[in-house]
Length: 352
Length: 137
Image (tube, rainbow over all chains, first blue to last red; front, side, top):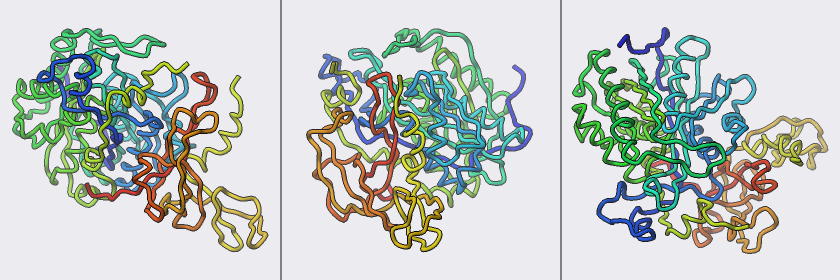
């Protein structure tokens, strides 16, 4: 263990924004179709994108919310980075489209990141570095997904849709200040999708101990030790949430309480939003945090790795919070659909 | 072979961001942008990014859709009177037909409009409108 990562110039979150599509399917409804066991479902319901939604359109709305809170013109962004496992094109960046729609195109870096559920926080690490090195004043990091689960597979219950966008910038303008970050990565084949394949493969129980728990616990444990912090020093903690059980278990093993994690644990209501999962949990925490609160943000991505961040909310948070729609708005905007409409929305019907 | 790429590229600002034009001479606002001002015959314009807020002027629902839009049926289209003045025709989204009412507040969102050439072609994105929702949860 060496040290945590800290930028030379102090960096923070200047603006943040969430997005969740309007449609929901209950896990109970999926269980009805496939004969699943009703009392052992991993979540209550998950968000489903509409027919005209994908990672690009959802990123645009989340990013517009983030820019509104940042009170910045889009041209101040020097990078637009989108992390996702469901980019609409195999070749052609989502990020150029998002940048164009925001009005940030031209003098800007743009690129797509891919690291299963960790792609969004990887983009956040890079945005911190870009601002922290003084190469840029503002950078946009997005984690967004419309993940597909194979019908009748365990992941069909949880593969949701949603995510969040963060404008990173200099600390003087921040609503939450970065204290430090960390990352822990190994080559662990717990979940993957080959080129041209519609649905991913996963290692069932193998996705737990050697993948999610090993990386999440190593990364968080090392980070806390290096920062000389303890779980009780944090008012809030967000863990990656492929279901509801895993983040509860990780939090308990690390010594975090239920009260610390519940505000940032949204998987029960919107499913696993993959690259967006930890980040959208962070938006809901920022919607509720007070100036001075310390927030732990921990992602996990299959393949596998975990990013950890510690932020402290500033007194700018209260004034910026209602410059865009809160995460609770998107959680409450909800139209329930049955499995038949879900199959249509998710292109599971053969039409030709 | 991908077709119409230049057309889609040329329209990106108006489609993604609702960029129209304002006449430099008489300040009339247009969407889509114009080359000649019908009010004062002026030919000088500045680009103008519309707020995307307006109200529903009229609407109808399509059950038999034109080519390229079949997968969305039934879907509603509407005319939205923007707060800045122009009347815009667009697809409506995130809404069921029975929730629509003339005069209701609308807001612009950027969504997927259609896919060119089946699974091989360009994805076309652009403005749609949905009922405006308050900021508070």
